[in-house]
Image (cartoon, rainbow, N blue to C red):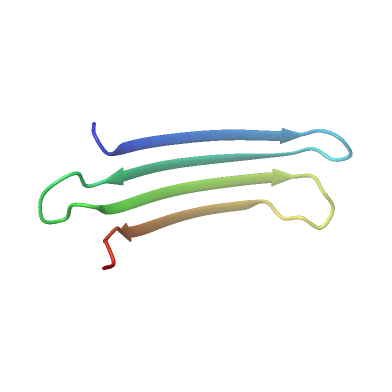
Length: 71
């Protein structure tokens, strides 16, 4: 599908204390019509950690963007 992009990342650390992070991202940019150049990005991140004082984190974000030319 034109204008659609997806990314997934997984990071893991095991030195002193273990932790991991997972990031998922889906982007879409309208290719034509009235809403051409309107973009939406949906992101989800999870962090799990055994580091003292650090809490587990889950985030969901939705970001709208619009590209235009300044003259």
